[in-house]
Image (cartoon, rainbow, N blue to C red):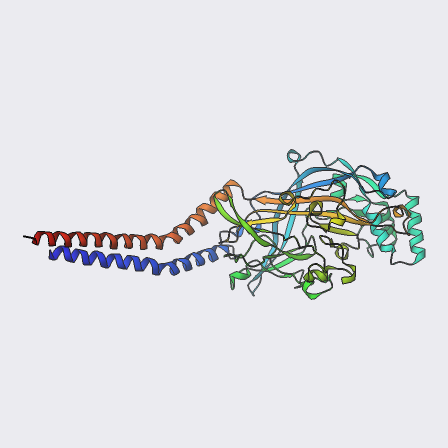
Length: 476
């Protein structure tokens, strides 16, 4: 009996120690997980994520859909345009950070070189397919003429008629994206050099293939993991200068390649996009699953391009001032596109003011919304789709006769989907190197506590049985 009693005492002590130890280890194991994640995420040559930060292993696709105008003559006489949407025309995008320079203040500087290679297997046609679209160089000059002396306006209009520049032109995918020689631009560049235009060519993505968008300096996260990949400056400046308020000119967030770990779903993650010349943010929408991994989805809110009246923080994006705000859902970027009347929106004018919608536009949240799916613990992006539409502000101008009969509108040229998701090899590496160790560390203290609890329960049951057996044996 004495031996059994001692056994119960020892077992109880062990159970209590395991149970208490398991509960007490929870904060410790959480700290171990935190430190392990931080160690692997800091931008450093020895970290697990460094190679992917330098050059993403997963394939990035840049897809374009073009709006082929089917009734140009009618539009010239004041009718609304009708389009045949054609796409996708798909390019494989390769990114590689170059000129990587480590700074003494916990930051690193680099250039992000991007290369695009056409993929016919994922396209509806070839780069030589031709579309009818609006003459962007002509309207760029028309916009410039509004603020020029009358003699300059007259000469420019005369020249455009002599060279036969029409309001609507036929151009191929390759020309629209990567550039072609434009008669008006070439004429102006010949006489003015680089004063007004860098060349006589025009293309929506001209000079973006085999090139970069400037020098980024970001925090490595070495001193503060919450600043991981946050931009300290771009091209040597902590802000841009195109907009009309300090808030609008701020460079907030990351470059979009990495996010801070341990996401706070109530916060709005920011990123800076040189394509649209500003910082934008996302909002948590829902949990999603990808290849068995729980992710959190952030989407661009419906008011991301709202005008300053609808959403006051966007007042700084109204140029030249709040009295010149465009309808909601549009972003005037002419100030950073060399004066070209370029206006960005979400594809098919998703979330835009209904007044700007045109025939054949069919906005759809699932197809046209921008989203980021990221691991809430590490912040690693598993799947992303950036969708954006390029439009031209078309309006009558007495200085360009070809526009005299048109309705004012925001003429869609094309929309893009820049997307990426981790491939099977990357998912397997993530599960093996990150997810499984974290899961083990996360449940280990609960297993220890559970074993201790079971020992306590079993010991109590055995003790009660022995007690009852002992009482029964004493009954005469």
